[in-house]
Amino acid sequence: MAGVGKQTAERAAPTRLLRAAAACASSPDVPGLARRPRPKRRLVGPDFLPPSIAGFASRSNGNTDAFQNGIRPQPGGYNQDVPADRRRARRVHERLLQAYGSPRWRPTLSPLEELSSTILSQNTNDTNRDRAFEALRERFPAWEAVRDAPQQAVIDAIRPAGLAPQKGPRIQRLLRQITDECGGLDLGFLHHTPSQDVYDWLIHFDGVGPKTASIVMLFSLGLPAFPVDTHVYRVTGRLGLRPPGITADQAHRVLAEAFAAETYLDAHLNLIRHGREVCHARNPECGTCRLLDLCPFGQARSAE
Image (cartoon, rainbow, N blue to C red; front, side):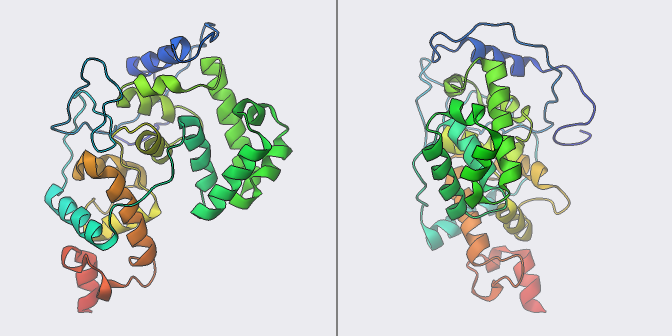
């Protein structure tokens, strides 16, 4: 399949994306939502999607709140033939659980909150991201207020996250795009939308790529998606869990196939922690790494 991610050549929006957008315009979770005609858009779909996982139960009696280990069950139908060493991934996951345990994550954010928080997290640490997010919500308790505020006021509120002149307008632009499409900012319909449709809908927005979409899906909606940040990309590359020549965007698909869906959240967070504490970009601590016997990179480095 030629190319991965958002292609430069446009094509018609896929049917699944139109279904998700239609759900937005008719969501029962948004009383009184304006049913205005939606503008026709030419959107670019991905060449990779979060894969369904064998053994995942389909929704029972329409119960979309039925979760397995925090991941909402999804119907099959979009498995992709991706080579992956699942046995190695399972051993890596189990070894990281022994080292770090099951990570505790912050309280679940709404999809809109998670989208904004992820934009704030770019090129900064978790502490600065959270400070900026809290300052933004304190200054503007309603997302409509963030959307309609003077640009400089939003920039000033999120300065702790860094790159505020870029992140502030990006958040406001996203809020306006969502309003244009949905007539409001309630994204409750995503809780009742299949994961492939959710993914397609999210990434068609400017500035929302595979990582941001996957974070919203996994952490806010409990959908099977495997986010790949710089630490996950580096550590999994050294472990041989992904081909060395693929991009981080391409790695989302490969790693989602390598790891079992019920391990996504723990594996993602523990890989990040391992990358921060042991498998540094420079001078990784291979000699004390608990994954050394599973790591071709570490073994080659230790043999030098």
